[in-house]
Length: 155
Image (cartoon, rainbow, N blue to C red; front, side, top):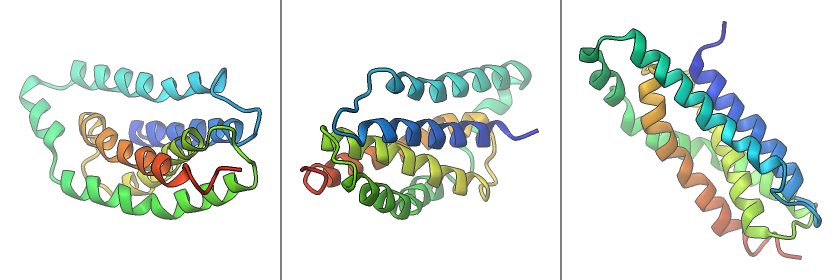
């Protein structure tokens, strides 16, 4: 059975890529597909609730803080550069009507891909760690995608 961390990161990557396909077209938008991005926080909240239920309170804080927060915050951003560049290049072919939004959604997809690579090597595998540090690391990438994508994705 896959770990909850992989389920969360792969879900982010897959749903964000699916939404990117929509916002990458001139007539595309977030209308129906944008709601799919809420799956990831819902999965994470459910997994955290289970972890908090089964673990004693004395273990919560050490698992939440972990040992590798600095690496998580740094490496997810670095690992997302390649996927973001590829997604932005692909979006240039699609002529999105909202370039900044398309760049931000591509950033979400890139951060999901990067987080999946990172979770494969991270020894802090607690859902509490993932719930705390991964969103901080992955929210930086959509911001970067928005800022970078505004001009090159215009048509």
